[in-house]
Figure (cartoon, rainbow, N blue to C red):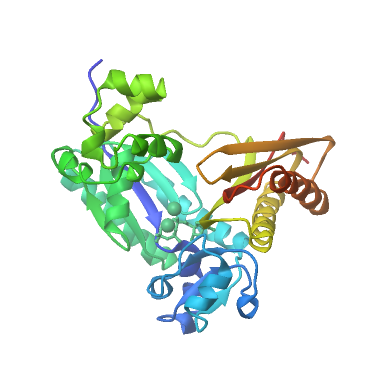
Length: 350
Ligand code: DCP
Ligand code: CA
Ligand code: CA
């Protein structure tokens, strides 16, 4: 089958939660803003959700303990996560995004792909991206970054490269030069586990990865080996596919550093539970199954689930059951924890 030439656009809002806060509170403009758990004078539990670029200058990042962010810049403006509001803003943004192509895929609150293969040239696609950026800025007073390329992987990488408030078109002939020096884990679609395995045999950069044959990669990783071989060459056939019916609602967070600190772990977990709960209520769902995800240092990932007798939408039940599951992880293993997550599934409408 002859591969069709495609043009894919990726859009990602700049420092999303913090930028929304900046917009709502113009008096904060130009000051470092940290959105996340309550720092409680440096004793707070939980993590940073995101920070604006002024705060990032101090080294503050998503996933960092809020207490560390406080150490780095106690003068920053610390704000709690107003997830319901960011969801509303996201809806407005996505309404605009969807107008630009009938083939769209919303990946998260602040991120989406559009298939804009109807553009006749890269130049036309670039102007298209500019128009989208302008409309979002005019209507929502928020900046975003747009990446355009022949597939999703390349479009996303172009966005990363152009951040913040940028627009980058990556044409097929520029891909090789761009990809070769990147670290293997920069390649979307290469999981952390895969990257770890490759590093063990001395492969750190994409150009090194390209030295492995398709057969060798298949031998190492099975079916996805071929996908990796393709990705390293900038090939990605994944279609832009519209939203599916919601089957589960989940949130997870990777800690900036692997940790065993129960205050940090449970504080973060509380944040995640609240976010999942809000989305559940927003969509008028009840859940029956709760799943807790735990990834240890070294990328070993485990899940534990509990299915209730009856569907429910009670926050206390969710909290209690989820915490019991998480506690079992902490008791069973002494390993450092890299990531925790929570998901509710078996959803029904109320
Ligand atoms: N988020 C979070 N916890 C994380 C990462 C992100 O709560 N560990 C939330 C806050 C972000 C939003 O998701 O604003 C979008 O995440 P991004 O990774 O796109 O990061 P930002 O939009 O904040 O910054 P950037 O400008 O780098 O895209
Ligand atoms: Ca973003
Ligand atoms: Ca994003």
